[in-house]
Length: 369
Image (tube, rainbow, N blue to C red):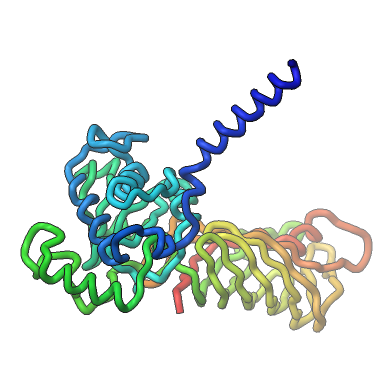
């Protein structure tokens, strides 16, 4: 009997977990056309947009998903459920992880748009309605609740992350949607203001944050000139040239970091591989040393091995206060790096640590290709 109760309890737990996770596992990427029962994919998108429009003016309410109040994910979840009887993930992050990622230029009415408004993960979402506009449940700002906003507004442009697709789209759907948008009056107003009407323009959203290749350049001031009695706040200048590939939350890049080290009297040319997020990266790679590295100390020169040879460099990099400018991001950045110099003679803490540790602060701009 005890075994029966244990089994009965386990089944109840399993059922509870399944019910809890069901909204998060409701679909993966684009919903197959056969699952949009009884209507065409174009009709599904139009139905979704009509339902979304019907919620305009509903107040914002955290965790809400009905006409008494909605948060951003509750608004999208309810729009899909009530218009198409489709169960999609209930959370913004669940929607982001499940939707098929598309380029911003591919956005069509009925697709989803995602934003990073708090922290470093996707935290806000809306339904794209065409003409560079989206409908969403806003929690802050001059207007709150279910409203229509533009992707090129400064706040949404700065926080935009990427676009996602849930419902099918192809040339046939495009033709049906264009005809419906131009004549059916899906949204209030005439055809000229109808967000479903063809505009001949791609969505006016930023491209940074979408998967793709990027390049960048930067310059930094290196701190901490070494030596005993010769310390200076200025040590050298560094430049940065980078090219790589960014995913939605991570990126990989090859970098050249030419540096003139006025304390060690050498020119360095590191070539590093960098991996990380938009905010933090780690990097490592070889560095060729032009010149004979040495400190001019009070008691004579302190020489280091590695002149005119290949050493290595490794470190971490972090960016701060990013400002989105067109298809790129300008930011302050700082680096802490280890440079592999080996001194001739016994270890002397102050100059030898200064020789091997580099601390830099500067500006860099990364742009999408």
